[in-house]
Length: 79
Image (cartoon, rainbow, N blue to C red; front, side, top):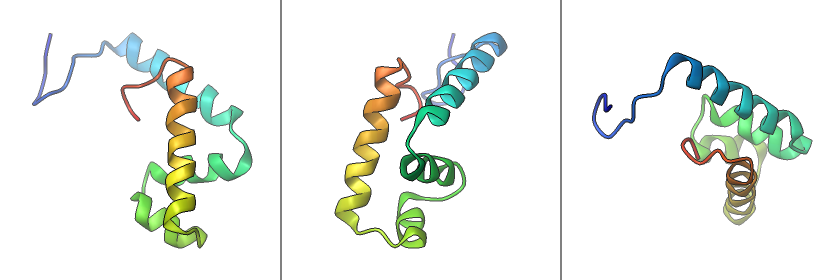
């Protein structure tokens, strides 16, 4: 099933499972990556980078690390 433009249908149960899986990954992150990840829920990567005083290259490396960790946990839909 499809809903919206380019969006796959996700059942309520699957949404809950995904939310729990995402929380587990976030909770397992080192503090510096956890802070970035949590800020990305409400801010753009540029806003997060500036707020934390990170260089572009440092932010890029940390984003790559976050993506790898989520993919390793089987979560690629949101990263």
